[in-house]
Length: 448
Image (cartoon, rainbow, N blue to C red; front, side, top):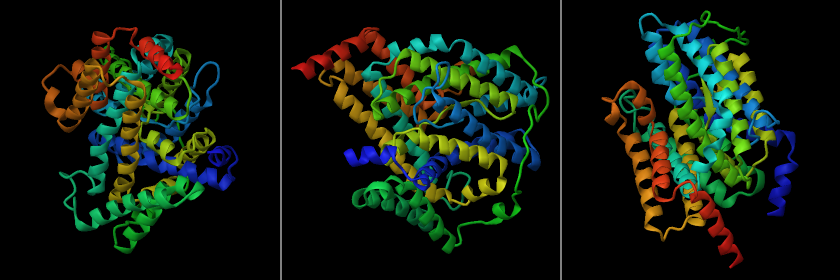
C-alpha cells in the first residue's frame, strides 16, 4: 500500500502522460459520437462537421480543467473528466429542426441553461441530503448497469442495426481479446504497467486489428494539421422560451447524473463530499455549458466512463486529469492527432469498456454492502426498484415515447430514471434523515 501511495504522488512525467492518454481514450468515443449524430441530423456540411468535432474535443478539455481546478468559487477538485451530455442529443436536434428556431436557437438555449446552473448551483448543492448511502450506492450501481449494454454493443462492432459486420468472429476475437489482456495484466502485472493496462490493451488491439485489415488510415491522411476556432461559428445565438426550458431540463438531468458520479469518486478517493463541494462542482459545469454555447459545441457534464478507470488504475491524483484535459485541448487544435484516436476499432474499444464499466458496477455493489443495512427490507426494495428501473429504461428506451417531451427528457435516460426512483423511494421509506441515520449507524458499528 505504501509503495502504491508513493507511486501516485511521485510519477515520471512520461508515466503521467501515458495515464492521461488512457483517460482521453476512455471517453473519446463518447465525446465524438455526439457531434457526429447531431451534425448528421442537422445536415451539416463536412467542413461544419469537422469544426464541430474539433471544438467539442477542445471544449471537453477546457471543461475538464475548470472542474479539476477546485478553487474557492468553482471546480470540485476530483479526478473527473467532462464531455458532452448524451441526454442533450435529442433535444438539440429537435430545436434545430423546429420551424422558426434553427441552430442559433440551440446555442442560445445552451447559454441560458448554463447561466441557470451557475446561478442556482448553491440550491443544487443541497441535493446531498437526498443522497444517503442507499441512494448513492444504488445510483453508482445503476451507472455501471446502464453502461454495460454500450460496451457490449461496441464489442460487437457498433450498433447491430447499422453495422452489417456486427458480431463477426473477428470483432468478437478483438473485443474479448482486449478484455482478456486487461484482466491478465491486472492479475499478473504490478505498478505502472498494471495502471495503464487499458491503454496497452487498446494499442495492442489496434495493432492486431491493423494486421487483420480492420484499421482505416484514410481519416489520418485527410486530416489537417491545424484547426482555428471562433466564437459563434454558426451565427449569433437566438433565445426562445421553449428551447431554453428544454435545455434547462437537460441541465437538471445532467446535474442529477453528475451528483452520483461525484459521490462515487468521493468514495474511491476517500474524500467526504460536502454540500459546498457539490456547489463548486455545479458552478464549474455551468461555466462549461456557457462556454459550450459560446463556441457552438455542446452542454458538458461529468463523464461516468472515467470512474472505472480511476478505480482500475488506482491513480487518484489530479495531475493525470490535468494532462488529459490539456491533451483534449491540443487535439481540438490539431485534427491530425484527433484522427489518430479515431483509428481504434469499435470492437477493440468495447472490450476495454466492459472491464471499466463493470468496475463501476462493482464499486456500487461494494458501497451498498459496506454502508447499507441490507437486512432491512425497505433498503432492499429501494435498490431493487431503482436498479430495475435504470436497467429497464436502458434496454427499452421507447417505453416513454408517448409522454410529453418535457417529461420524456427526465424519463428516457436509464441513469436519471433509476436515480429519481432511488431518491423518491428513500424519501418515502427513510425521509431526509436517512443519511444521518445511516452515518450514525456506521459510527456505532465502528465503535462496537
